[in-house]
Image (cartoon, rainbow over all chains, first blue to last red; front, top):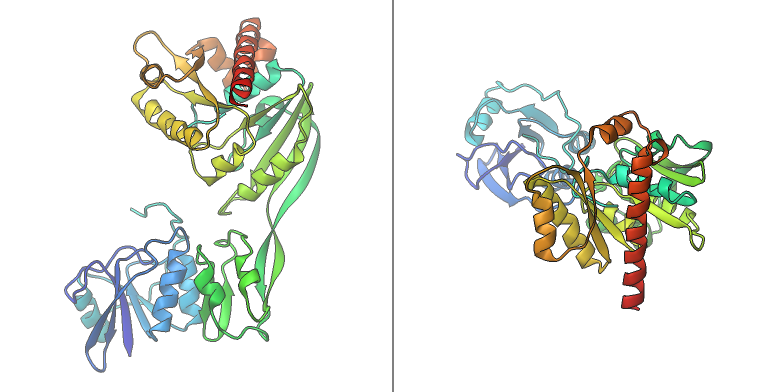
Length: 122
Length: 282
C-alpha cells in the first residue's frame, strides 16, 4: 500500500505542506517495503488547475492513500475517480502522520474547500 | 480608461466623458463587476447569452494517449482509470485539445459563461458585459463586446476597463486609439498607476493621466507624472458635491453645470491629444 503526502522538503521528517496543489514535493511511502520516494511537484508553476495536475501525478504513481491537511474540490474529484482515500493529517511531520495512519489514528478528510484559484490560502 | 486597482475613478471618468460627448458609445468591460449601467440606467435593453466551447469526450474513441492532458496549460483535463475527466470551470476554451486529439474523440460543447447587454441612455449606446460567478476568464465576453460595437465616424467609444493589467485589460485596450489612466493621489495610487503605465507603454498606446481625488498638498501621482514626463489631462477635485452625485449613481455631467463644463473641457483635451497622437505617429 502506497501513501502520498505533500511535503515542504525531501525528508521523512519534513513538515506536511499546507497546500496540496502547490506543495514543492510529494512523498510516496510504501508501507510494505518501507521505501520513500520524493517527487518534484511539476504543478507548482501552473497558472491554474494545479490541484488537478498534482492529483493526476499521484494517481499515476499508483498511490492508494493521500494524507493532507486540506484539499480543493477539483483535486478531490480526481482522487475520488482514482479511488484514492484521503485522510486528514493531525501533526506537523510526515513521518508522525504515517505512523498515526498505520496506527489507525487518522480520520477521513471530509471538508473539501472550493479551491483558492490563484489566491493564497493563508 | 484604465487603473491598476478598483475604485480610482475609471467608471466616473468613462461615464461622464461619454455623457459629455452626448452621441457616443460606452462599453463596460469590467465584466466581473460592471457598474456603468447603474449610472446610465439604459433602456431598450437587448440581451445575448455568451457561449464558449468546452471539450466533450467520446469515450469509445479515446485511446488514452493523454496528449490533451499534457497539452492543457490550465490543467482542465485528467485521465484516471481509463477515463478522461474535463474540469469545465478550469477550462479557458482555447480549443487546443480538440485540435490536438489524434482519435478525434473530443468535440466542442457549448457552455454559457455570462451575457452582454446593449441599451441606450439619452444618446449614449451602453454595452455591458456580465461574467457568471466562478468563471475563470471574462476575455471571451470582452472580445464579443468590442466586436459588437461598430463605431461610426465622429462618434467616440469609451471603454471602461477592468482594474489591473492582466490579460483581460490587454484585451480591452486592444483596439483603443488612446488610453486614459486614472490615478489616486497616494503612494499606493502611484504603485497602481505604474502598473498600467508599464502596460500601455508595452502596447505602444498613446496615453495620458487623469488625476482623481485631488486635494491641497503634495500629490504623489502628479509627482510621478512630472518625473516621467506623462501628460496630465485633468485634475478632478476631491469634492463633496461630486462624491454625493456619484454615490447616488447620478451622472455628474447631467446634473451639475460645473461638472458638465469640467468633463466637456476634459473631453476636448483628450480629443486634441488623440488627434495629435494619431497625426504625429502616422
